Length: 196
Image (cartoon, rainbow, N blue to C red):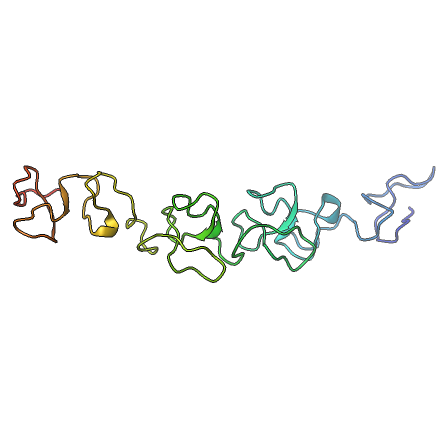
């Protein structure tokens, strides 16, 4: 067997009478079939950094599946400042899988935001370099800006049942201007059977 580039893998097309090897590029010793970082790709497959298991072709499967990128948090978006020869991506925080372009799709489908509770609204006080969102409580997906029942109040505004338009803070305004109560007949008094 011959090994023209001396990388330890034999030539695929050697001279007649010589056993063939498995080297995918026997003119370049840096391209070979071993998968040193166990990411499923070797340099033969296009892995641009076979020492980093987070860097390979398709690592940023949402952003650019055909490019060799680094995606340490596995959110589908490449690191904006890779430390190797990988193609830079658009992930604003590659240590946080909840921060990437479009993470808070109800605030912005393209802005790089963090959405810890995955309710579609971005954190109001994210890490440096991440655009702020409008979520009133990013630790609780049940609290958000949606006004499902169209009563003028959201769960962020203490609507205790956002699926019933007769239930909201001040519904029973004669009894309380602030308490979340049900007033089905709109007489200013709370119903005996509240809807929450």
